[in-house]
Structure formats: structure tokens, C-alpha cells
Image 1 (tube, rainbow, N blue to C red):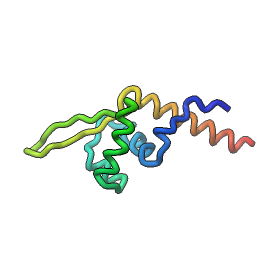
Image 2: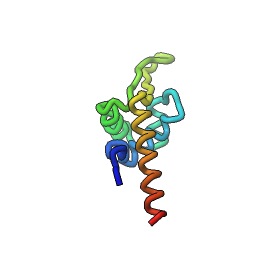
Image 3: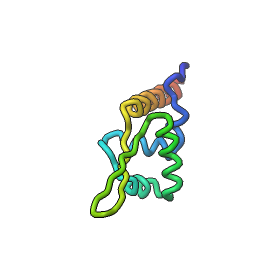
Image 4: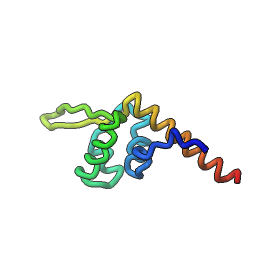
Length: 99
């Protein structure tokens, strides 16, 4: 069995949830992701930094109504990596049910 597309960086539970949450969207505000994961700002920042360093997500900073805001989105590379990882998980599931 070839696990070439199994991505251990994405597979960490919170990072997997981040990618899954961002996958069907254009971008999502930082607090929305934080609240969905029910983690602190620092925990989310750490996970996003790992994904950013891999080129999987980017953050866009801006302001609205005088408040600084940050939006997070999956890059093209991130979308492909997430899709490949999900496909590999599906293969693993199929393999485990076929044996």
C-alpha cells in the first residue's frame, strides 16, 4: 500500500478540521475558525503557522469598522494537498473494510 499522498502535517486533528472547514469556502475570518475549533487564539495561530509554512494556507489582513481583521484561505497547493489526503484516507478505509 502506497501512502504517498498521506499528509501527516494535515492529519493532525485541528489542522485537518481547519482544511475541511476552509475547503468549501473562499476565506474565513480568524475568530470564526477559532470558535469552530473551540481553541485559543494562540493555539489556532500555531496550527495556521504550520499550514502557512507548508504553503497550504495564507492569511489576508485588513480592517473593517476600525478593527483589525484576518481572513484565512486555502491556497491552490493546500486544496490539492487536502484533496489528496482525503483520497488517501478513503483508500485506507476501503483497504481496512476489504480485508
